[in-house]
Image (cartoon, rainbow, N blue to C red; front, side, top):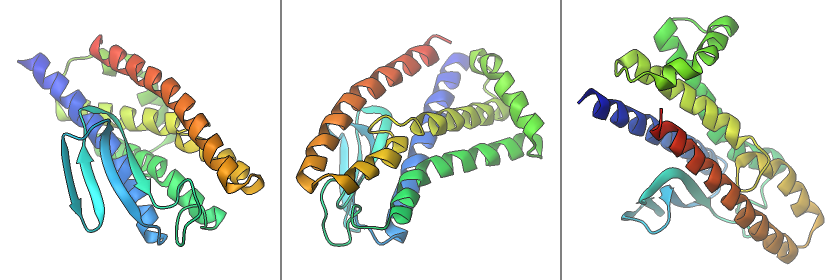
Length: 211
């Protein structure tokens, strides 16, 4: 029974990490005046799909990941993503990582009642003992939630499409390429990058499953 509770805690921590990341993009987009078309937890054909407030909300079977589809990501449309200022685009792109790191600090404070460089470094040094432990107390749940958000935040800063970090240079390409050329290039880069990211996700799931 304890082992199943342990697996449930891992699942809940991963879902919270994904939801908080995508919620960061969602809120930032709306605050910047950019329409959000869809908010998805997971990839592939949705198992649950509802439209509310003009946004499609969905959950899919492949839950390791998610996305926020915003207006005008690949083509210039009125009030869309690409026609925003570079600062606004960076706020939207990096907001997911920002809230992941914010949750890291919140979890850390709840556990240790302080946030210092030494205490943060101490948690990182305990990565393997924390992950390999099957303890199911609230402290271990918060520790895992902290580590997941830290890892997801760092991974999303990697400059590989479609990860958030790639937009820092991809938006530079958008400035020097025609709209059609950028649309095609972006689609190719995201397709190749998605394969790489999926392999990383599978490796992460394999690691979690075998701890």
